[in-house]
Length: 175
Image (cartoon, one colour):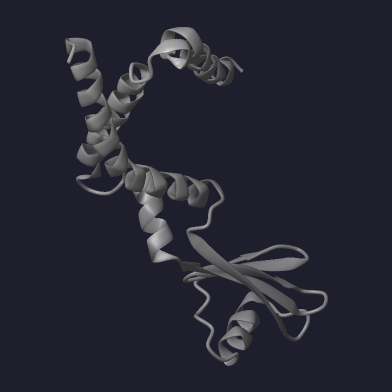
């Protein structure tokens, strides 16, 4: 077997096995990127409560506490037509004119938040895994350039796709 073919054979074997390894990590990065970009780490619930109209901040706190299963209000910002209020895990506003309190509560989604932290490299020790992953991806990209010989190989067909990928990144960098 020619030396060139032996190198290509070993490149294929290593490329294949390294590819299997990074597929799992790539899927996690892809999903976490979607979760992160669409802010899916927190579930928001919106609710309303009808209260008496024209309450002042102190009266609002008392009437709020008389409702079942609501946390204590810990910050109030009074405005001419409404009162903004904040409580652990949420916030809302009370409309003075009609007595309607509209509020939202936030609940973390632990797995999604963890994946988002991985994506942003905020998990202790993950930067080492991320660096290894980047090196393996670079190897896969470079070894893949030389795996296919002939008319569908890198120097005949692949170079155009390679150039298109670089131009795509440059287009976004320059815009």
